[in-house]
Amino acid sequence: MHDAEQTEPFKSKIAEEILPGQSLQDEASLVKFAGQTVKTNYHLSAA
Image (cartoon, rainbow, N blue to C red; front, side):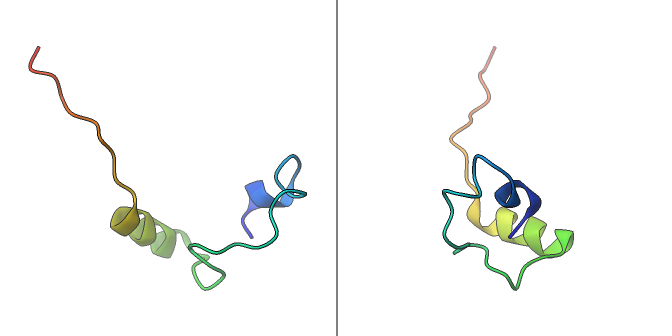
């Protein structure tokens, strides 16, 4: 688990990490995972 998951209030509420999983621990792997999975609905306005 990552640091935020090891402290309260999250620690008592999280049973296990499903994604990205224990195999992705270094920053480069986490950045790649986020780039492949995170999407936004943000659109620039034409102001």
